[in-house]
Image 1 (tube, rainbow, N blue to C red):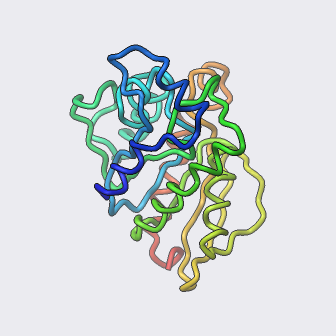
Image 2 (spheres, rainbow, N blue to C red):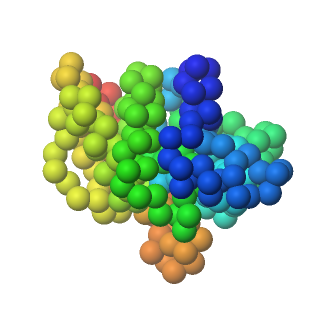
Length: 222
Protein backbone atom coordinates (compact mmCIF):
# COMPACT_ATOMS: atom_id res chain seq x y z
CA UNK A 1 0.00 0.00 0.00
CA UNK A 2 2.87 2.39 0.73
CA UNK A 3 4.18 1.89 -2.80
CA UNK A 4 0.71 2.59 -4.20
CA UNK A 5 0.37 5.85 -2.25
CA UNK A 6 3.88 6.95 -3.21
CA UNK A 7 3.09 6.46 -6.90
CA UNK A 8 -0.30 8.11 -6.52
CA UNK A 9 0.86 11.34 -4.89
CA UNK A 10 3.68 11.65 -7.46
CA UNK A 11 1.34 11.43 -10.46
CA UNK A 12 1.35 14.31 -12.97
CA UNK A 13 -0.38 12.51 -15.81
CA UNK A 14 -3.15 15.07 -16.33
CA UNK A 15 -1.72 18.52 -17.22
CA UNK A 16 -4.94 20.44 -16.52
CA UNK A 17 -5.39 18.91 -13.07
CA UNK A 18 -1.71 19.32 -12.20
CA UNK A 19 -1.82 22.99 -13.14
CA UNK A 20 -5.04 23.58 -11.22
CA UNK A 21 -3.98 21.91 -7.97
CA UNK A 22 -0.66 23.78 -8.07
CA UNK A 23 -2.47 27.11 -8.33
CA UNK A 24 -3.48 27.01 -4.66
CA UNK A 25 -1.60 28.57 -1.71
CA UNK A 26 1.67 27.06 -0.51
CA UNK A 27 0.09 25.70 2.69
CA UNK A 28 -2.24 23.44 0.66
CA UNK A 29 -1.48 19.77 -0.02
CA UNK A 30 -1.59 20.37 -3.81
CA UNK A 31 -1.00 16.72 -4.78
CA UNK A 32 -3.21 13.79 -5.72
CA UNK A 33 -5.07 12.89 -2.53
CA UNK A 34 -4.53 9.38 -1.11
CA UNK A 35 -7.34 7.24 0.32
CA UNK A 36 -8.35 7.19 3.96
CA UNK A 37 -9.43 4.20 6.04
CA UNK A 38 -8.69 0.54 6.57
CA UNK A 39 -7.06 -1.63 3.92
CA UNK A 40 -9.10 -4.60 5.16
CA UNK A 41 -12.33 -2.58 5.02
CA UNK A 42 -15.58 -4.27 4.08
CA UNK A 43 -17.17 -1.03 2.86
CA UNK A 44 -15.60 1.21 0.21
CA UNK A 45 -16.82 4.76 -0.40
CA UNK A 46 -16.02 6.37 -3.75
CA UNK A 47 -16.36 10.11 -4.20
CA UNK A 48 -15.98 12.14 -7.37
CA UNK A 49 -12.68 13.88 -6.56
CA UNK A 50 -10.99 15.81 -3.74
CA UNK A 51 -12.58 19.19 -3.02
CA UNK A 52 -10.41 22.17 -3.97
CA UNK A 53 -10.52 23.56 -0.42
CA UNK A 54 -11.12 20.22 1.28
CA UNK A 55 -8.88 17.24 0.50
CA UNK A 56 -6.73 19.33 -1.84
CA UNK A 57 -5.98 21.56 1.14
CA UNK A 58 -5.67 18.98 3.93
CA UNK A 59 -4.23 15.99 2.06
CA UNK A 60 -6.91 13.56 3.30
CA UNK A 61 -10.02 12.46 1.45
CA UNK A 62 -13.26 14.07 2.62
CA UNK A 63 -11.57 16.34 5.14
CA UNK A 64 -11.85 20.03 5.86
CA UNK A 65 -15.11 21.15 4.28
CA UNK A 66 -18.89 20.84 4.68
CA UNK A 67 -19.16 17.71 2.53
CA UNK A 68 -16.57 16.07 4.76
CA UNK A 69 -18.52 16.78 7.91
CA UNK A 70 -21.78 15.62 6.34
CA UNK A 71 -20.20 12.30 5.41
CA UNK A 72 -18.41 11.81 8.73
CA UNK A 73 -21.52 12.68 10.71
CA UNK A 74 -23.41 9.93 8.88
CA UNK A 75 -20.57 7.43 9.37
CA UNK A 76 -20.51 8.27 13.07
CA UNK A 77 -24.26 7.71 13.35
CA UNK A 78 -23.88 4.16 12.02
CA UNK A 79 -20.76 3.34 14.06
CA UNK A 80 -18.21 3.60 11.24
CA UNK A 81 -16.33 6.59 12.73
CA UNK A 82 -15.24 7.61 16.21
CA UNK A 83 -16.34 11.26 15.79
CA UNK A 84 -18.86 13.21 13.70
CA UNK A 85 -16.42 15.61 12.02
CA UNK A 86 -13.41 15.58 9.69
CA UNK A 87 -11.50 18.85 9.73
CA UNK A 88 -7.77 18.06 9.45
CA UNK A 89 -5.33 15.18 9.11
CA UNK A 90 -4.57 15.35 12.82
CA UNK A 91 -8.14 15.70 14.13
CA UNK A 92 -8.17 12.19 15.64
CA UNK A 93 -10.63 10.68 13.16
CA UNK A 94 -10.69 6.89 13.03
CA UNK A 95 -12.72 4.90 10.53
CA UNK A 96 -14.01 1.41 11.24
CA UNK A 97 -14.60 -1.13 8.44
CA UNK A 98 -14.53 1.71 5.90
CA UNK A 99 -12.16 2.86 3.15
CA UNK A 100 -12.70 6.22 1.41
CA UNK A 101 -11.33 7.02 -2.03
CA UNK A 102 -12.35 8.83 -5.23
CA UNK A 103 -12.77 8.27 -8.94
CA UNK A 104 -10.36 11.14 -9.67
CA UNK A 105 -7.51 11.78 -7.23
CA UNK A 106 -6.87 15.47 -7.98
CA UNK A 107 -9.22 18.40 -7.47
CA UNK A 108 -10.66 19.37 -10.87
CA UNK A 109 -11.71 22.90 -11.90
CA UNK A 110 -15.41 23.46 -11.09
CA UNK A 111 -15.55 19.87 -9.76
CA UNK A 112 -15.72 18.64 -13.35
CA UNK A 113 -13.01 16.22 -14.49
CA UNK A 114 -13.03 15.45 -18.19
CA UNK A 115 -13.32 12.00 -19.73
CA UNK A 116 -9.57 11.55 -20.30
CA UNK A 117 -8.82 12.51 -16.70
CA UNK A 118 -11.35 10.01 -15.41
CA UNK A 119 -9.88 7.26 -17.58
CA UNK A 120 -6.32 8.13 -16.54
CA UNK A 121 -7.22 7.90 -12.87
CA UNK A 122 -9.17 4.67 -13.31
CA UNK A 123 -5.85 2.80 -13.22
CA UNK A 124 -5.46 3.81 -9.58
CA UNK A 125 -9.06 2.88 -8.79
CA UNK A 126 -8.52 -0.48 -10.47
CA UNK A 127 -5.46 -1.09 -8.33
CA UNK A 128 -7.42 -0.20 -5.20
CA UNK A 129 -10.16 -2.68 -6.04
CA UNK A 130 -7.53 -5.40 -6.39
CA UNK A 131 -5.89 -4.40 -3.08
CA UNK A 132 -9.19 -4.30 -1.15
CA UNK A 133 -9.67 -8.05 -1.01
CA UNK A 134 -12.07 -7.89 1.93
CA UNK A 135 -14.46 -5.35 0.36
CA UNK A 136 -18.09 -6.50 0.28
CA UNK A 137 -19.96 -3.27 -0.43
CA UNK A 138 -19.02 -0.29 -2.62
CA UNK A 139 -20.87 3.01 -2.29
CA UNK A 140 -20.63 5.46 -5.19
CA UNK A 141 -21.35 9.15 -4.56
CA UNK A 142 -22.83 10.42 -7.81
CA UNK A 143 -22.88 9.32 -11.43
CA UNK A 144 -19.18 9.85 -12.19
CA UNK A 145 -18.14 7.65 -9.26
CA UNK A 146 -20.83 5.12 -10.22
CA UNK A 147 -19.74 4.91 -13.85
CA UNK A 148 -16.06 4.82 -12.86
CA UNK A 149 -16.32 1.88 -10.50
CA UNK A 150 -18.52 -0.05 -12.94
CA UNK A 151 -15.94 0.58 -15.66
CA UNK A 152 -13.22 -0.83 -13.40
CA UNK A 153 -15.35 -3.79 -12.31
CA UNK A 154 -16.01 -4.79 -15.93
CA UNK A 155 -12.39 -4.24 -16.91
CA UNK A 156 -11.18 -6.78 -14.34
CA UNK A 157 -13.84 -9.33 -15.21
CA UNK A 158 -16.63 -8.67 -12.72
CA UNK A 159 -20.19 -9.24 -13.95
CA UNK A 160 -22.27 -6.09 -13.44
CA UNK A 161 -25.94 -5.64 -14.46
CA UNK A 162 -26.71 -2.56 -16.56
CA UNK A 163 -28.26 -0.25 -13.96
CA UNK A 164 -28.21 3.53 -14.30
CA UNK A 165 -27.24 5.62 -11.30
CA UNK A 166 -29.91 6.76 -8.89
CA UNK A 167 -29.94 7.36 -5.15
CA UNK A 168 -30.46 4.05 -3.39
CA UNK A 169 -29.60 1.91 -6.41
CA UNK A 170 -28.49 -1.54 -5.26
CA UNK A 171 -26.64 -3.81 -7.67
CA UNK A 172 -25.37 -7.34 -7.14
CA UNK A 173 -21.90 -7.75 -8.67
CA UNK A 174 -20.41 -11.18 -9.36
CA UNK A 175 -16.64 -11.64 -9.20
CA UNK A 176 -14.78 -14.15 -11.42
CA UNK A 177 -14.65 -16.62 -8.51
CA UNK A 178 -18.49 -16.35 -8.36
CA UNK A 179 -18.50 -14.58 -5.00
CA UNK A 180 -20.91 -11.66 -4.63
CA UNK A 181 -20.30 -8.04 -3.70
CA UNK A 182 -22.70 -5.08 -3.76
CA UNK A 183 -22.73 -1.62 -5.30
CA UNK A 184 -24.93 1.11 -3.81
CA UNK A 185 -25.63 4.49 -5.40
CA UNK A 186 -25.93 7.63 -3.29
CA UNK A 187 -26.21 11.32 -3.93
CA UNK A 188 -23.06 13.18 -2.94
CA UNK A 189 -23.16 14.74 0.57
CA UNK A 190 -22.38 18.18 -0.86
CA UNK A 191 -23.70 21.37 0.74
CA UNK A 192 -25.88 21.97 -2.31
CA UNK A 193 -27.53 18.55 -2.14
CA UNK A 194 -28.04 18.79 1.61
CA UNK A 195 -29.34 22.37 1.64
CA UNK A 196 -31.80 21.79 -1.20
CA UNK A 197 -33.10 18.62 0.43
CA UNK A 198 -32.12 16.43 -2.49
CA UNK A 199 -30.16 14.47 0.11
CA UNK A 200 -30.95 14.51 3.83
CA UNK A 201 -28.87 13.22 6.70
CA UNK A 202 -31.47 10.50 7.26
CA UNK A 203 -31.15 9.42 3.62
CA UNK A 204 -27.37 9.28 3.91
CA UNK A 205 -27.50 7.35 7.18
CA UNK A 206 -29.89 4.89 5.52
CA UNK A 207 -27.33 4.23 2.77
CA UNK A 208 -24.72 3.27 5.36
CA UNK A 209 -27.25 1.27 7.36
CA UNK A 210 -28.00 -0.73 4.20
CA UNK A 211 -24.28 -1.32 3.66
CA UNK A 212 -23.91 -2.47 7.26
CA UNK A 213 -26.79 -4.93 6.87
CA UNK A 214 -25.34 -6.32 3.64
CA UNK A 215 -21.95 -6.89 5.26
CA UNK A 216 -23.56 -8.57 8.28
CA UNK A 217 -25.88 -10.80 6.25
CA UNK A 218 -23.37 -13.47 5.24
CA UNK A 219 -25.95 -15.48 3.34
CA UNK A 220 -26.50 -12.64 0.87
CA UNK A 221 -22.88 -11.73 0.15
CA UNK A 222 -21.23 -15.14 -0.23
